[in-house]
Length: 50
Length: 218
Image (tube, each protein chain N blue to C red):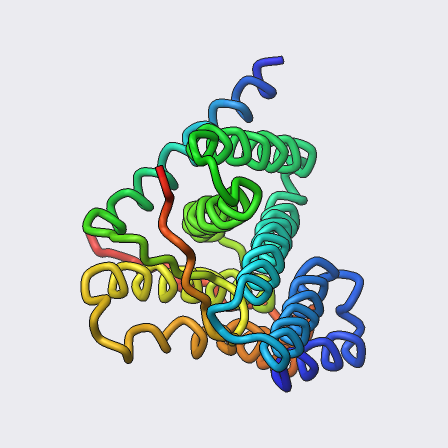
């Protein structure tokens, strides 16, 4: 049980760390996106309407 | 594409296809996705919704495959400690947590909800994969892992993720420069090339020599 809770805590820690890193890297972001896979050109994504 | 084919052929020839099945799966899916994108791009423009849908949905699928590939490498590293079950548990929690978090972020959007979800999930999972790879680097160092293939595959994965994070930051810092937008597609070739070189150059039995302990006189 404690190992399962440990796994959950580790997963949450990783998730929080990853989102912190994303926020840090995209601090001055406009709607620019960058994708991690393949060599094809990245299309432009329309900005949110709301 | 050539690098991907080379990696898969090398894996089959050197008998490593089953052992590194999820890495091969990612490379095969990556080639299929590139093929689909090129076919769509041949009939529709770069700014067309058709290409946008094809690109973002295939990218989401690929990022999930890459995440599973990272988890499979973690399973190899922790197999000797009998922690494979908990690695899978962490992976499931992470995947569900990331999906839930992403949905919470995009739920307010009124248009293109599914596409926005695919895009955000892809980016969030990518950063989760980045953190996981760094943790895996730490585990490899701490456990004194000596399997050359495994170590080099994890190192190249870490370099790939780091380079993408760097290019992501660069695009955000200097979006007006056209050249920074080409870095990401060029980096797309790096992973299959490095994995193919690893499979070609090293056998499964190859081990790294651990650094010798230095005797310090008292």
